Length: 258
Image 1 (cartoon, rainbow, N blue to C red):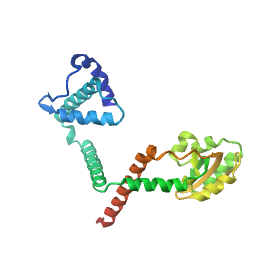
Image 2: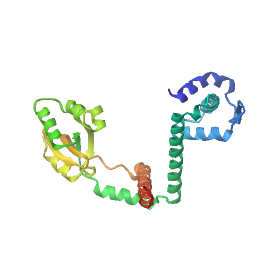
Image 3: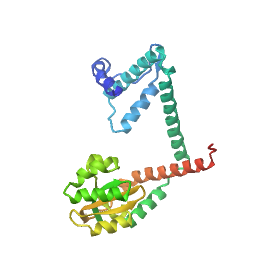
Image 4: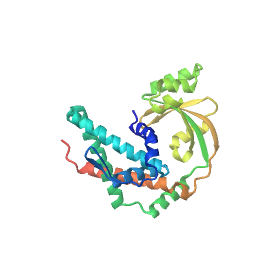
């Protein structure tokens, strides 16, 4: 059940009574919900594309009021003391603190504009001239791959076999279709194999997680690399993730695990 959707729908009726009111503290059954708390939720909504408006402010206010009421009832019922809820609260606390730690680490160890531009230029230098429309069926063993090929040879569609046997979760949804991929983003052995495949022909390659049957559904000239201004945000986030992952590995190397 989506708590926010329920409250935002209910807020429509309340909006007529409070439109135009400034964000202010509100006390619910003795619990204060400050204007600052409301502003934080509003800011998060705006950062995800919502437009600030009296409706949004009222929706957030009603959501926080409802949460306070429901939380009070849950506490009265002693639900926070049950093992299942205790476990969830522990996991939620760990996740929140971990995310806060990562954000703080990135703030103290920022990715510079020069780092982002360097990564873009390196990507530009590697950017291939060709794109392949790739389909694949991921399996655990070569025998499984050959069995999948045998089914294809008997006339079953690639999508049907992919949905039936692929261990790639996405393949069960899209029939193994990976879409158009620039050759620079593919392992060299796969590029070599794809360039020689025609029509419905397939081949088997060994990968890091097992084997895969691949098919070249089409070849075309690569689209132009997006302009730096358009992708620099994505590159920055990727570099920040790399920094965090490297830091976690460093912490793990020093951890005492028994």
